[in-house]
Length: 172
Image 1 (spheres, rainbow, N blue to C red):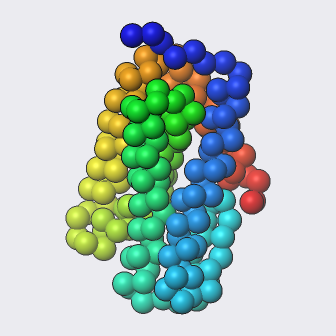
Image 2 (cartoon, rainbow, N blue to C red):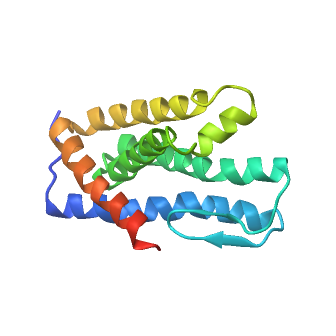
């Protein structure tokens, strides 16, 4: 199998796709909040309902972000498989990377999946680990389809780390 070539444009897309992935994820929280009739707030690093909400609405709002991120990963893998799309791989990478980093952050501040996992009595780690592992498997499948190796993954990780830093510290 021929390896997919990467270059400056590819890694620029990795950077930009981070902002788009954050917008999609947080947009899911915002959309769920307003769909349920709450006043929503949105930034690239957090979104939800401004007012107090009941447990069911909070669960739906919390689940909406990861649901869209998982959907992003599934659609991206389908495009990688069907079209050998390097651009789709970038969005697949971001779905896995974002939820991995959110899982790491859960050691200090429980992420969406950790809060849902706790709500259902599954402990803190059941859903974060399941989502991270699931998306990581999708990333491995997509990487193999394109012949992308550890070098591409490592460089993407560095660029994505810079993008996450930009999102967190930009205040957007």
